[in-house]
Length: 315
Image (cartoon, rainbow, N blue to C red; front, side):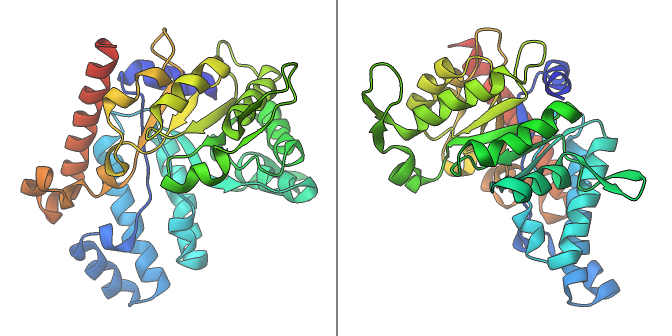
């Protein structure tokens, strides 16, 4: 699946992933009203509004981008009805030829970790049949339970030719409370190093046993809001694709991203969520209005594509 991601990036010329993270207040009133008329002000009504919102955005941008990243928490808040929409969204995006990165941040040990891996990336045996659960192409994984928590995901990736993005240096302001802590390295020098560097080295080691043609199925999450750390981690993980959150609404911009990419122009894919799906709420795109929210999302994708391309050209 890493090869499909690379091919999609090359075809579109846009190393961009759209985060389908729909809070209900992002959904225009006309969609909410229609859903509530059909299902009432219920969890099913809210989920239907989200589904119609997602569908219009996907239709508007699918020819411009290689991938999407639905954040499962935004669907789980609506219970089972929300999870049904999560699955419908995954299926619809795959029908459009998009790579789907499930932002699920799973991390556990033993049979629990294995079950998460099977549910999101693999297939579960039901009688004599093998059935897919959510069937994303990649998912995000939390590594802080150690190798016991990550290896079951790698095993499924090897079986299914799918991938994971391991949290290494996240974009949130408080990430440094733990990720920047200096710890004793197990390497020959034995010096103190930031924890995120040690995790990055481990990602590279995991990935060496799980390679595609030129990049590993094991990637990393490194926030756009930490470009200097990104520069270091790019060198530590030369064969890992980096998923870069934090662009746009969290403050990241094209000029911050150049060090996340390798010299081949590949190696990173940049996420924007509310900056795209709620673009119609921004002053820059207010001319579209709520009625044409999906057109505003398309305009935001085009602007992001231009920003990243200009930054890479001038690096």
